[in-house]
Amino acid sequence: MKFYNKTLRTLRNNFDFNLVSSNNESPSQSTQSSQLTQSSQLTPDSPTNIFFYGKIRIVLVCLICVFLLCNVNGCSRSTENKASAEKKENDKDKDKKTLDAPEVIIDNVLQNDVQLYLYAIGETSPYKSVDIRARVAGYLRKYFYSHGDVVNQGSKLAQIEREQYQYALDISKQDLIIAQQKEIQAKKDLDRDRPLAKEEIKTQEELLQRETEYQTAIATVKRCQVAVQQAELNLEYTDIKAPITGKTTQHLVDENNFISPGTAEAKLLSITQLDPIYVDFFVSDKEFADLKERMGYRDKFNKLINKIQPEKSIDPKINSTENKNNSQNAKNNKNTENEEINEFLGFQGGTFEASLTSATAAVPSDFPLKGTLKAVIDNRISSNTGQVTIRGELRNPLIDSNNGRDYLIYAGQICRVRIPYETVTNAILIREEALLTDLDTKYVFVIQKGTYTPQPNPLIPKSKQDLTPYETELAFRRDVKIGRLLDNQQRIIIHGLKPGEKYIVKGVQRARHGSPVKPTSIEEFNQRREKEENENQTTQKNDSTKNNSATVIGSVEVQPPTNNDKK
Image (cartoon, rainbow, N blue to C red):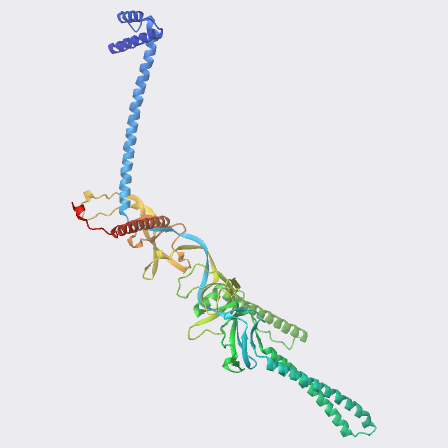
């Protein structure tokens, strides 16, 4: 109570002083009022100070509430700090345990629709190939093309001397004129002797002789006409023209050499037609059977076999009209079945894709050339190689360049061919490098969250070991059944995995079944590797720059000090 009254007195004095200052009183008056206030006896029940004491009580209550709130907040903050500190310690322990686990690179199991292909090695062959030979004898005067040019059908390639053949044509034409005149004369003689023979002025023998002369003249005219045609043809053969459009070879015979038909020198060049161009590729008997099986040959064949029925025997007791109808229906059915078989068998209309790569090159991911299957050009599977040859056709248009026209694909090139034959929907795919082999079993390591209990180390006292179970990422072995390998190095999984599961791609040798691992996505791993490579390149550049500068400094010639420098 004394403390309470003392506090009130102090507050009242301060309050009176503030009132005096606020009313701009004189210094003497303020001093007098303060002395009166100090000398006066203040009690809480004083009527003059009821209003003042009420305000003081409110201030004190507010101060007490503020004090209590501060204590409560301090306690709650201390509790939160303790909890956060414990959480940080647990996270540190967990991070420490995670750091101790081996790092592995993981990826997600994919599910996509994939197209299956049959791969084979093929070789291109020309659509047509023609050897150009001389058909008449003479000296080779001139070529009208350069080595390896692309020529059009009907264009002039070379010329043999034509003078002698022109002379022969002129002589043949003159002989034809003579023969025609003889024919006319023989016709006149025959017409003159016929009435004389009727009047018996001319004998029958003379008349027969005139008829023979006339028929001989007619035959001579025809022979001369053929000779003229032959002379014209020989003259035409002196101009050697291209029978097809294609690419030429080099000149096999030089100009001004004498050439003659039927000799080795008669071959002047060769032309190959390369648009379109054939692709012959070889598949084994097993692949050939699998290809036909997946293309639906077996189902179509079974349906056709079920439709084929032997012709019904003709019953002599049934009338002839029914027998004729039955036999005609049997023939029609047989013809229809044969048409269906002919339409179904063969590879006509199928498609394939080709890539111009070496047979020893890696499997390419792009097959830009699209073609059409033509036929199986072998009628049997080779007993030596166990393969059958399939022929396809590709378009190979001409390309205009600064050096002239040329083709992209040449005959004899090795190429890789793939034939689409089946589409797998919702196929499960993983990377080929993630597969492991245990005898005849294929398996992968998948990542799953779980509780791991550390195993005690017999070499360390148990009191110093932390064997508390904790949640982490664990690696588990999963046996799988595999399918075909795709050209992008992805493997189809038939059984054992589900879409979205995580599996280990790299670092599988550090993983153990049921043990914790530190997974890193393959995207993060690639980014980190690129960053490290960039840093290494930057470091190497800086080192090379320093070495170059040091070399320049070391190459500066230092003069020996003189006597003045020594002093």
